[in-house]
Length: 411
Ligand code: PMP
Image 1 (tube, rainbow, N blue to C red):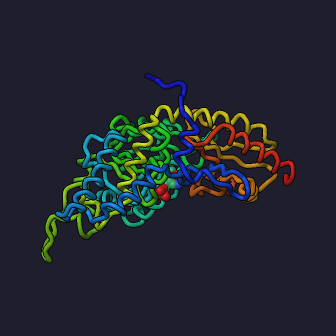
Image 2: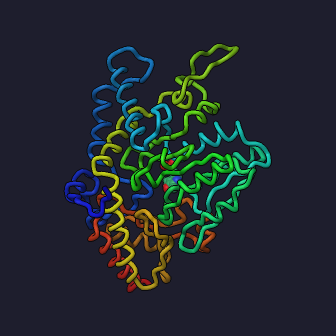
Image 3: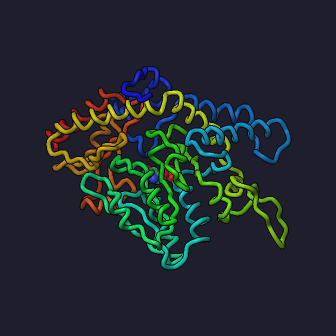
């Protein structure tokens, strides 16, 4: 059934996030920097505390009760994520530090093994630096070449361009699901189909997708999917890499150490099975245990409900902010997540950020780790307001009024 209206109890949701209940510079905090990192619900915070107070132990190798309890909790998160992104098998979920770490893992463990001089890697012009630089490093190491899908004026990309740019040399296509700077949701399923037609693998940067979209890796038919726990109400330093079993099995781990081995001798080492083959060393156990609570929180609210609510917020933002004199929006594509990026004709983004902070409103200013995209638009950076489930239309109206005030005083 398609959800068209949300029935959120917004006060109840806000009460789940203790950090929201505070004054900043004498004003009630309005937190609009969710694309950088979201706030954490009590359930996540409590899970970390419960772990350290109740069953902190190293996982997998121990036979004692605490070690077993910690291992079970850790592996429960993996099962939760299998369902959360609809992976076919639980072994296809690898824990990482975040999206950056996941992409680097693929670049090293897949790219360095299978790419050679003359191969092509295709990304889009709106990628975060973490979906650019690992591929540049790979190109340096292998002689492969990076190609870029152009971004249109509204912040979208065209499938016709993707089709034109994929050649028989393309080995990998890596595109952001939802842009952190513009909000644009890209047609990653269609891009994956085009990549596969050319026998290339498809990687999706899902850093902004996990908390805003209903991600189904089997439906997308992507080969790799990366995301960060801290952008979906989970702890920092956690993330996942989903990869199709056959690819993960063919890859050579790029970090060696404990946990990722079956047998070690000075003559020869055999690697562990997936996913452990890619999880060298003691992982971030407490935070990964707590990450389950974040995924459960999203699932309990309902991904479709969240999408509808955040769309309402975004629509409201575009409406009320359009009244701010001299505002220019970046990222006006039809399909977008709750990110509103803009500049003001007469006030520098950094000044706007500081003046909004004085009003208790937290936004982000700058290039948002997408410098090539800013260069494309011929700007240094934007002001970015990004919304989550705990934000309200009233807060957005307050932002618009704040901007009008800034323009009237300093513009
Ligand atoms: N990709 C996108 C689209 C992002 O928004 C971010 C974080 N801003 C990243 C990648 C990198 O994520 P992390 O810093 O959590 O590794």
